Length: 292
Image (cartoon, rainbow, N blue to C red; front, side, top):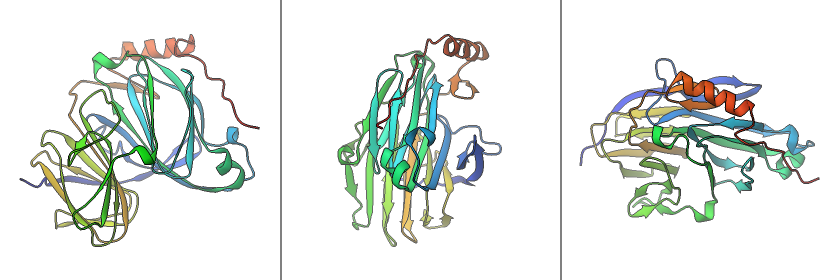
C-alpha cells in the first residue's frame, strides 16, 4: 500500500453569496475544479430566532447538469422542490439531489431554528454529472444520520460515516452518476487511521474545524482543503485536536464543462438552452409551503 502525497493545501476564502457569508475552498485561485467536484461551500451561522422560515436560507432557484449535495452538521434543512419532494433532514444527515434536466428547489433552516434560533451549519458541494446523465430525470435522495453506515477506526477514536461509495466493506446508500466516495469524519485528539481510496480517484479532504496531521508530515488547520496527488491507494490522518472533516473522492469524468450560476453543462449552447428552459417553466415551478 502506498500513501498518497499532498498536491496542495488550499485555505478557504470568505465569499459573499447574495448576503450569505460562506467559507469557500473550491473553486480557488487557479483551481476551477477537482474533477468531478466543482464547488465546496461551508456555511456556519447563528440564527437569532424570532423569524419565519420563509425569510431564512435560500429561496427557490434552479439547477441543471450536476448534483448539489448538502451535509448537515448543526440544525436541520427543509428541502422543497418542483418535483414534489418536501423533506427535513437534521444534523448528521445528507440531502443529495441529482438535478438532471432541471429542477427548482429551496433550502431553508427548520421552522424551529427560524423561530427559536440556534446554530445552523452545513456544507454544500457540487458534483458534476457526465454528459450522458445531464438530461436525466431529476431525483432527490434524503439520508438521515441513522441510515448512514458508520464504522470506527481501530483505535476507536475516529467515527467514519459512509455517505456514498464503499470503504471497509461498508457501502453508502446514495446512488451516484459516477464512482464516488463521500465520507464524514469525526476525529478525537490522538485518533489515527488509514483510509483506502482508489489511486485513480481525485481526492480532497476539507476540515470544518480542529487540526490534523496528514501522512505524519503536514499539519493542517480549520477550513483547510487538502488536495491529494493520485500517487497512492490510501491516506493517513491523525487528529491533533478534535476535528470534523469530510473526504470527497471520485473518478474523474474528464469532460470539458461550462458553468453559469446554477447550471453546469458541457457547452455554452447548452447553458443558453438551460436559461431558456428555466424561463419557460420547463424545470417546474416551486410554490413553497410552510407551517404557520
